[in-house]
Length: 286
Image (cartoon, rainbow, N blue to C red; front, side):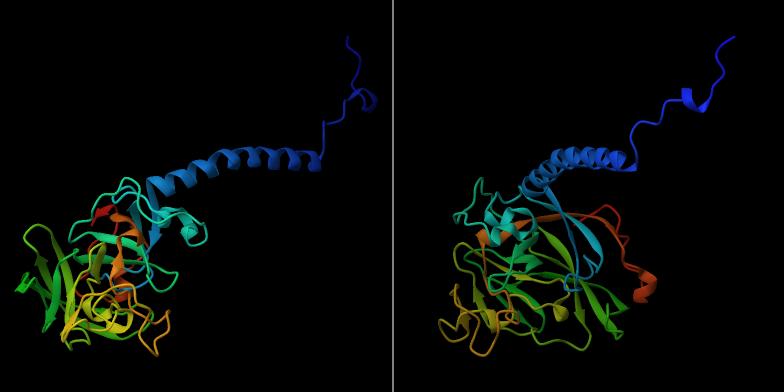
């Protein structure tokens, strides 16, 4: 028969809570030291996730949409660094492996006048002349194709007011997109002509009457000739703070990437009282 077990013959448990905690933290440290650099490289060079904070791109993007941004679509500049680190890291200007955007792209970019990340649609390419007449986009003197689709009603996020809008399908002959124009009109339905400088792009929000974009003069230079704005690089106009200024013309170097896909969303059709309900926000291409 074996010896009976008793307190004096039982070995104590190895270590205690403190030792287990230290071991667990050490393992987490090793894991993070591997994962974080991989994540930073991936989000800096391949794709990064952006959350939509406003309704300027309704109906194509809703508040709460989680969007995958293609970082290699236009090549890389200092603005390609994740978490907007390019604002603080002294890297040179210019782009590596540069690829030119196309009209109709939904692009993410750094605001030219203030440290904010924006998302809008590219409407004007370098050399284009863009103007709006009664809400209709004129490209190089001719109206782009625009077809009425339907009327929609929804409650604005965080405001509580109901909006009635006309939905259009617009096209430049190659790309097409959906836009909203409020029934009661807006401030930017008629504009001067914008001649896009070389190395710059003209952006607009798809929610035309709820987007402070390239149509607003506050972020542009003064007219180069009557009814024409064609210069870039000026500070916001007198009396306008950088935080209130429009984006003006956006330099190519400010582009971060192209928004390709809505991965998922916290948007609720019921909460917005949308009639008809907006499209589902799950793995949907833009």
